[in-house]
Length: 178
Image 1 (spheres, rainbow, N blue to C red):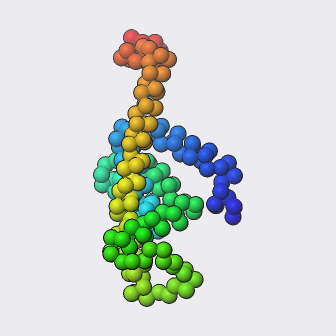
Image 2 (image 1 turned 45 degrees about the vertical axis):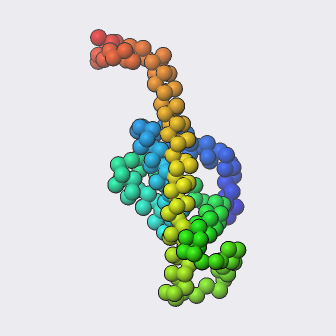
Image 3 (image 1 turned 180 degrees about the vertical axis):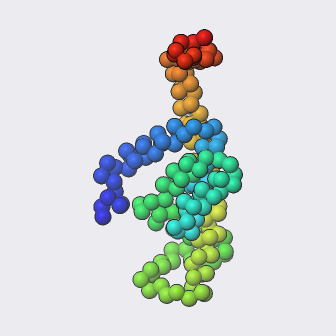
């Protein structure tokens, strides 16, 4: 149970692993960063259980990196969801002009009826749009810069280790450049 909330290796190691997976994706920095931003945006959406599917769909529609969008969804996890939902809900309440600042929602006494569903869902839906866009932009630029930097370093390392291939020489079947 503890492993669901706090990984044994810690969040720093998990974040480092995800970062390495992200920057090593074989695509342009823009497509990787935009895919990641779409994943972050979708992690703020109120459609629980559909985050990955919606991220993949929108990444496919915008022709950006689908794997990056799936990685962006990992921003939403059991530790961050309560903070994300609070920000999204309060933003939605402000957008609707309601005055429920500091209102506590008793999750143990929720009953399902259409009126109470919409009273709770509509602020989440509306609030997720600006908060998701803002957070997507917050992550887009550092990811784009990080991916571009990694690809530059990889290219420079390739030129040093494979000078004949980097110069455009095509190796023959013997392994020697022609």
